Length: 608
Image 1 (spheres, one colour):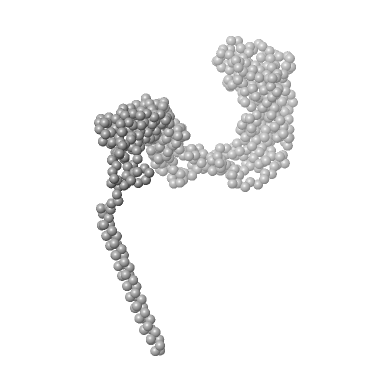
Image 2 (cartoon, one colour; image 1 turned 45 degrees about the vertical axis):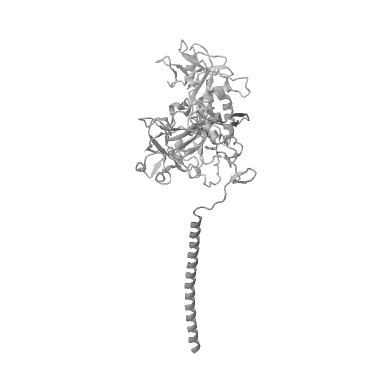
């Protein structure tokens, strides 16, 4: 569909904005820049338009072409977005909605499947045709018309979807609108504008135009990518701008009707450079082979780059089929005056990726954590997009809480490693005993405990119960509250018991364990709370009973080595006391000698 769908609104808004922004500048005279007062000048495309004849007196294609040629132009073209907008705006003023005008597009005389602009021989872009307007074959329709239709149903004035080019017979009759290029200003007139480091920029109709020196068009003079002005720094303290007498600010230029430029002051632009020295010390490129010898320059200019070799298991982040990466000098977005290495995180080499893990695990299982075996970086359950990469070790568990795998394991480990014989492809491997082939069909079951751990099936259950002096009946209480009384010797008949099941044995009369009732509890890890049940023992008068629970308390007995420990302690105390006395005697002797010396000095002093 032709872009004319929104041209009307855009054209109106631009014309209003253009009038307000150009009020301080002299108006552009169409007669001057178009060499004739009958022409209407449109500054964005830089073209002049003229309707020849009445809209109520259409003419044939050849007649229309000859009239435009006589007027010094050609039939209208829509060979660019700026041209589309300007032609739309002009036709809004001189035509009624739904009108059609002859277009310059014709079938190429060399190839009947190609459409060209007759005045320039350039190909016609397919986006400018209206829906269904471009036929599969000319079939006698070798010329074209441009439909200019305004939707009356929309208050905003959008062009109707039917607008655009349509193939037509050259013998039909339509209105004539001609176009020709207007004169332009010379950029070389602007002092301080360096075309190697700067570009003239204008935004009209939402289009970004560069180096378009059209009359009546206000442009900003900007640094090209890879260059900067000192005032671009976020730390720069730029004084308030002083406009020119024409109202232009620094770095602005306006092409006047007389072919000259009015412009504000222009600050020079300087080239961006990146420091390569920091890549050898402060900033290291990750996941690459040693690269110090690759850095042949201390500084690199904008867009200049160097190559590095990726480590085993890593490939270029731009092309996963190569094992070399590129580091390029770029311009910092945060501070345009600074060079910045690209990619900004220096991750030019990225880990080889395995297939989605769902292709190798059961639908009842899910990955929940991963660890990079190179740098020990861990990833949690909400970072699963980082799981399937070399050399990660990924942990898998059952999706449903309270379930484990049917082989009674809670976790399976997978390793993302390089495929055999490849440096650029990876695949999943089982790790630490995980059978990768079985994992695809491995089911999850509710957590349970094995009854064989209570009484071995290979053992004589009756003898064990009798020796332990348990009563013949055992109470089984399930997690859902159900209670069952079963023979103690049949407690291992079910292969498993669900999580939270409690199995309680009872001691025969006249016996107790001394540590409470013998009971088992199935824990969340699929294990019983104890591996050995205590046996019941007979009560006797020699047993010292204590507390409400009447737990067995053995009589106090001195440890076998208590005497030797006491002797060692006594020896340490004696040695310590002897050392203290020796130290005190030494100090006392020193003080006595000092007292004698002082007395002799005192007697000597009295004699004299």
